[in-house]
Length: 490
Ligand code: GLN
Image (cartoon, rainbow, N blue to C red; front, side, top):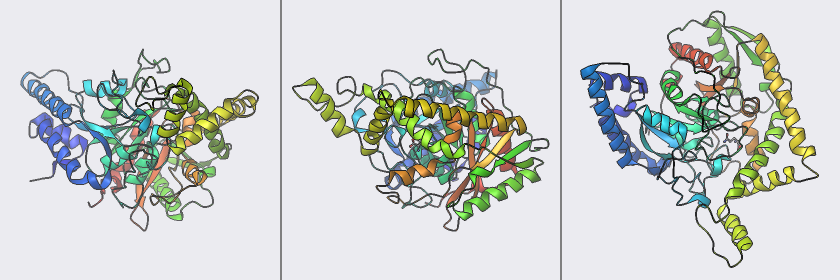
């Protein structure tokens, strides 16, 4: 029998339409694979098999009716098993953000992005592991233990959407939702050989996404190719009255058929090739740029002059916003409580015991940066520099349509490698943070392997709301390369 989990999302959707396969079969195949592999990978924090089987039965009925009666084409997501990062609320299903402080929390509602996928017929297999409150680049900051990279179990899958990336790469699901505040979709996609979209700020509703850095947070997704990813984006994108920052602009109907990129102008920013980056990463990116040239694109050197300021600016703004967002975990409204006679003591002991190291570090940094007397010097100043970084992108997009660059300076590192050195971990984010500060979209996709057979990812950025060009360019690349088809032997 063929392994159903080896099918691409598009292949699975095609077989569902002809009736050669049922959603229930796909769902059971995914659940079996999770049971076989996840004790070694730990991609999931919670499984929802009952919900999944109920949803797959409903999808099978929807498909059967469509085959009998015809009608409008069904979304490609109907009957497709997916996973959801555990920072997105799903009604009555444990949602922890990888934190002890939310252990036992059952959200009373479902995030818009998840709700839309469910309405588009997707089947939810479970919630995936994440760095605590999405703070991290390796999924090691999860209070429930790290996720392992399916390509090398001694290494990290990237983060913070490491559970989603590992689940996609090990074929436990056909696609997964992730979130990207500073790189958390693109970097794990790169480390695990997945294709991941970081959407434009405001393109996808944040309603029901547990907030980290509200001016940076975006919902995105990971899958095995640009073509597989597109139906997920189509399902989740678009205005939502429940999120005042969700753009009202219409979402284009994206069709992927053109493999010709003639006329496309791609800029390669010189600031993204820095000392200390892994030479194999640099070589693979430069080779991928040549592939784009062979597809007809015109490439050229460009400059994003404030790139080196993105890291310090991000690590002021993100912790500042996080410190405000996380104030709500007060030992009264959510999760467990370490009882105390005095209310203030209860607040401090619960937060002290149940938040992890990295979260507490960022709350302290952020609170300091926002405190009176320091606000102008830190947060205010950081916002000004953020405007310069945004201006870099605006100026570049006057001259080019897309920007091509690496996702991360290295391939997947070993679990524990960055140990107690948060700064060295923050350096992993240098190439992904600028897009979040500017609010522009990015896609990460496989462009090769290093000598340890660890995946290397390339990133393309587009102007705000320019996702269509990203899907198109990545799809064209994947039409003449096969890196994205490689998968780990488990
Ligand atoms: N690694 C970055 C951080 O730790 C980005 C995380 C994210 O995108 N959620 O903040």
